[in-house]
Length: 390
Ligand code: SF4
Ligand code: SF4
Image (tube, rainbow, N blue to C red; front, top):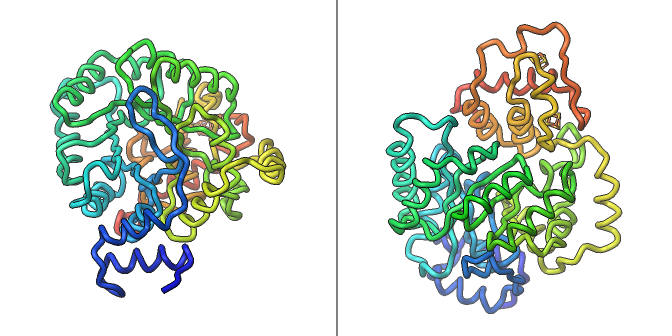
């Protein structure tokens, strides 16, 4: 039977559910390994891991068949988090990976905490880690990230460093790291100084404000043995500020792959078409002239991605966590993922009447965002019951 790759992925995925072909999963995996185009690999810092340059951010996915199709295509690194889909995301990843050879995949998860750390932080954070392992149905993950850090002090917090080191010593994770949307070169330098981090998951795309400084810091990190994984590579997923026109995912991925210090990217594909787009890009990962022109044209456009420059935080009379709120806006209008958007908002300390003290907004955004309008639009989600959100 002759199958093109696209059909093969769909049949593989459905066969796993037993609906079309009663072929055991592992035999599908081995059929695929021979069939699948080889994905180039890069070393992940000093971890000893060599990962395909395309990985999967599972965050938005709720269909295990898409994971199966990714796995069958040669993607081995799956990134989830304690908070995604209220734990269901970790459960889906665990169900999917259960029974597969432990050395055939790399799984990363993240747990978030508030700063300053609470009195009971150590026991609460350990409990979160244990819950994540239980949901994932495994005794250890490969990479554990402290989720979504904003400040240098958070990177160096001695109580956090002690807990992360303990997780590693106990064998609950092979490697430790943190994720950051703030892209502060200072955070990378703090990680080098802290000396315990193996991996940093960083927002990285052509819209970054401190691109040169960030790239130089990444190079210093790599020199110190830290591996870098990239996220938010598609600047919100659309090429307009309203979230209407899908961005060229391939061009965005290729732009990131130009930086050889980035080991792999975790695009958050959640359906077959998005996966196919990523696979098409990785089959031909060099940035071509057309891609370059496309990216150059978007560089000065207002998109959905907040570059986290934090100018607005100083401008705002209430010092609202505007970059996080803009990220929530992007999740809703770019990713079309209101549940994650609400989850992001609920993690923030927000008053009941946001922006109530202002007649006129004093914020001017470097990206041109109408911050007050965006806040008014997105904060309505807080009132929507979770059962109405996807
Ligand atoms: S209206 Fe503008 S300045 Fe006032 S609280 Fe909202 S974001 Fe801040
Ligand atoms: S000024 Fe604009 S781009 Fe900068 S952090 Fe604030 S919302 Fe984001």
